[in-house]
Length: 215
Image 1 (cartoon, one colour):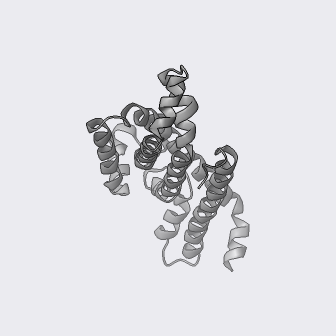
Image 2 (cartoon, helix red, strand yellow):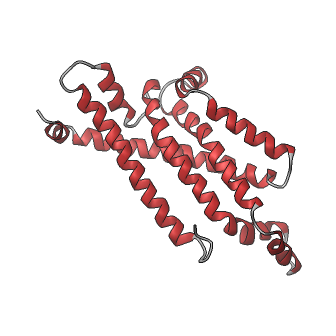
Image 3 (tube, helix red, strand yellow):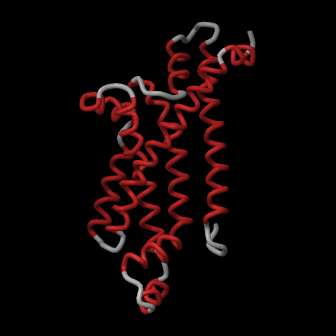
C-alpha cells in the first residue's frame, strides 16, 4: 500500500487532528496576546520592568518542551490544560518583544503632536501608537504562530490534541509497515498549517496595515 492509499483510508482522522492542532495553536496564541500585549503597554516606557518581563519570557522559551509539558501535568493533569498553558508560555516572548519594540519605535514627535491636539494618554495609545506599531506586533504574532505549530506536536505526550498524536503513533509503532506513513501524515499536516497561517498573516498584514507602514 502506498502512502496516498493509506492517507485516503484515514483522511478523516488526519483532518480532525489538523483542525485540533490549529485550534490548540490559536488558543495558546490568543492567551499569549491577552497577557503579553497589556504587559508590553505597561512596561515599554520603563527600564527595569521592561527588561524583567522580557527576561522572564526569554527564560520560559529556553525550557525544553518535554520538560515543561511534563511539569504542568501535576497541577493541570493531562489533555488540553497543560497543552494550552505550555503553548501560551512559549508564545509570550515573540508577542511581548515585538509589541515592546513596535511601541518604542513610534516617533515621539508623532505622539507629542497628538497630545498637543488634546488627546489623552489612552487615546494616543489606541489611535496613534498601537496602529503605528501594528506591523511589528503582527510580525511577532506570525513568529509565535510558526513556533507553536511545531511545539504543539509535543502535546500528544500529555494526551493533548493535534497532529502530534499521529507522529507519536508512528514512532510508537516503528518497524511496522505503516509507521512511517503515520509520521509523515502528522509532519505534512503541520507543514500545510504553517503555509496556510503564513498566507493568512500576509493577508491580514495587507488588509490592516496603513498604507506606507507595511514591510
